[in-house]
Each structure stands twice: as C-alpha cells, then as structure tokens.
Image (tube, rainbow over all chains, first blue to last red; front, top):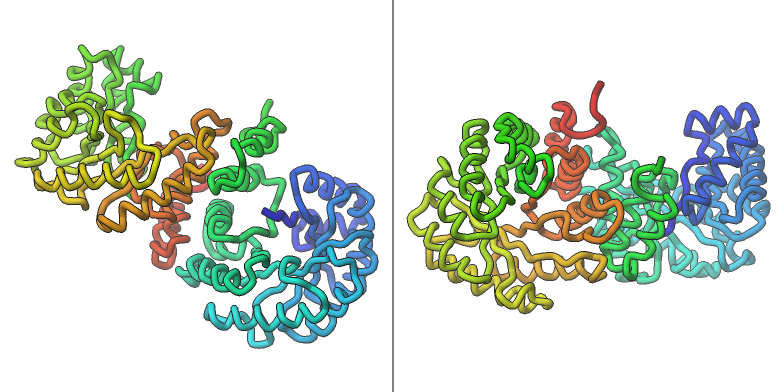
Length: 270
Length: 270
C-alpha cells in the first residue's frame, strides 16, 4: 500500500494558520510525523489564493525537503504551478494531479520527458465534461491519458489512476462501481497503481471516519494500492496492516506484529 | 448480517462470576443490552463443569426468555445438553452447534424433525479427524451434513455453515481460503448462511480487535452473512453498518444514518 500523507494541505485550518503565520516548525513537525508513521509520499498543497500559491508551495517544499527524506507529492489544481515547482524538488516524487481537463496534459506531460524516471503521476479520470458516469467511459479516458503519457516516457507502473469515486450517499453503488473500474483498468494495465482520496465516499454522511476506514479496507481488497490519507490516524494505519495480513501479504504476520511492537498500531501505550 | 450476540458465555470471567453468584440481574441486563444493540440471536453458553451445565443453561434460558423477545442461540459442546434444553425454548432459535464429531448428528438432527420449521442450526465443518485442511474436504463434509440434515426437514436456508477458520498467525492464507470455502459452499447451496466467530482469525496476535474487525468487513464482502460477535462493540456495529452500505445494501444509506441518529454507531454522544 502506497501511503500519500495528506496532513500538509492548506485546506486544513491548522495548516492554513501555519501558512499565514509562516510557522515553519508546524510544517516541519507534520512532515516528520507523517514520514515516521510510514508515509511513502508527503503531499504538499498550498490551498491559498492563486497569487500567493507558488510562493507558499515553494516555502512548504523547502521546509519538508530539509526535514525528511520522504519524497514529495506536489499538489495543485493549477498545472502551471506544478510545472513551476517541479524543478524545486531535490528528488523524484509524485505529481498530483493530471486529468483530461483544460491544458493539464499539455503542461504536465512534457515535464516527464527529461525528468528522472522515478517521477510518478496521479491521473484523475475526468475531463472538461466532468466525471464520466460509466465504467466504460472512465476506462476510455484512462486509456487515452495513459497512452499519451507513454509518449513522454511515463510507463503505467509510474501512474496512479484515481477513478474519482462518487459519494455513497448520492450513489449507492459507488463502491461496487469503483471495484468494476479497478478491474477494468487493471485488465488493460496490470502494473498500474489505483489510488483514491478516502473521504469522497463518505460525503454527506455522519461518522465519516468509520465509512472511510471500511471503504479503505474493502478497496485494498479489490485492488486499490495507493491512497491519499492521514498516516497519523492509528485506526487507518492499523486497518492497513491488518488488511495486508488478511490478504496474505504479510509473512507470519511479521509486519503487523512489528508495527504493534513499535507502537504504530493499537491503543497508545501509557 | 445475522448477529449472534456472544456476551452470555460462561467462558467470559464476568459471566462466570454471575453464574456462580446466581446474579440474575447481570444475565438479564446483558440480554437486554444485546437485543437493543441489534442482536438477532442471544447466545447462551454455560461453560461450566458438565455436572452443572444443564442446570446452569436452563437458568440462563429462563432469564433471557423472560427479558427479551430475541430468539436464543443455545450453545454447548455436548449434544445431549442441547437436546435437553431444546424443549425449554419458548420460540424457535438457533442450535450451536453440530459437526461430524462423535454422535452430534444422531442426537441433534432428530430434534428438527418435529420442531417448528423456524429452528436453525450451526454446522461446523469438522469431524472426528479434526478440521480438514483443504477447501475440497470442507466442502465434502458440508455436503454430507447438509444432505443428512435435509432428511430431517432442515433446509439449507436454515443452516449456518462455520468453515472453522484457522488463525492467520499459523496460516497466512487463512482468510483467502475462507473466501474460497464460502464460494465453493455457496455454489452448491446458494441460500445457505455462512457464519464464523470473529476471534479465531486473530489468535496469537496483538490488537486482536483490530484484526477481528477488518476480518469481519472483508468476510461480509466475500459472503459471510452471520457471525458470533459482541453487538455491544460500537466499532463492530459501526463496521457492519458501513460495510452493508458500501456493498450497496442500504438504500440512500438510511440504515447507516438511522443507526447514527439512534446513537448506535460513532462516538458516544455526551
């Protein structure tokens, strides 16, 4: 399971405050905590007004890179911002995200042409028409974008497809469709990653954490191998270790037992 | 999901004490709490020395039947005890359990011949040779016992097969084999119930609740529709409601939302 740590996003009020007050320590500590908890990428998203987004993102990137070895996931809705911060990263990371919308493909794909072949990319299955409402159309969009990516040297094993799951409250079959989408995409690209934010599924529902956690467990089982989540949540990390073991991916349950011994999962030891 | 409430088992120290001190109130309150939490059956297991088991079980049955409308799950390793308490139940319930061991089939199946056709039976897939170690042998045992049950009027829709899952710590493929067993059994008997205790999977591991809960979520997804569990655990009940919704079984997520409104799931409201 590839964990993209979500705690450095300007949409979170405490992060917003830290950005406004230039609180480097806050940013540093969140980066270190996520890295120690097992994040594979640290997402950085400024979430500020466009005129200060670039400056803010550069500031965050510098702090995180100095604090941890974990690669960055540079995150912006604006491809020009992603292009601008790309060279500032001192090691290959993850670009979050491309889609068929606007000029995203034209701006982002050329970045990969000359870049370190370890750079990876999140692709969302939507375009100017929005999010397709059938598995077939999502697969079609995926194919179009993956094939285009290949022209820039970006192989499917470096791509994380986000099938843009619908909220369960608006579509009761949302998770079952997600499963079908994963199966359809993996049939064409067996080595591709499938990712998702965890919280879209529970939009409009109470006890969202409960729904998100069970969604994650089931999604891992049906083939999701990457997710944007809070690695500081002991419940989520516990569910990941337990699910990997149940799926037969943890020989003698050693990783699970070690995570417990290191205090990463289970009740906090006094 | 059919919930068999497990909180009235003499193997639990507080229940053992209540049995020893003849604390009727304790038994009554645990029955009421489980019924209110949504148990479909209240398991009663004396867990005492054989010479007092019958007396104890009768005492428990009387208290529970007076306290709640929820049917009983009469639970003993000794088929003669189950036969003796069977007529004491004032409504049809669940017999827990039969297997191919000893004289269980000969003693238990005739009970169903003349009984109310709402009585149900848990069948464990083991015999005098122990628990088979292949899917094929478990299926064979299942078929033998289900076909024998039919002769006594007990149809598959009234049978809960417990495939006797192995601990994940001793068999890394335990859950994946459970999935295969469910599929194999359902192919022959589509209408049969599949049940399990939740705690066998986590034997020998730390943070057993975490493992049990994720096992339950995944097992529901692969077809387990009955389980012996603690309905007073908000985490487990929350996982059940969330998983049913994710599986598309909860139109407009109404059951999930109602469970929250009634305070059954989520953080306890102050």
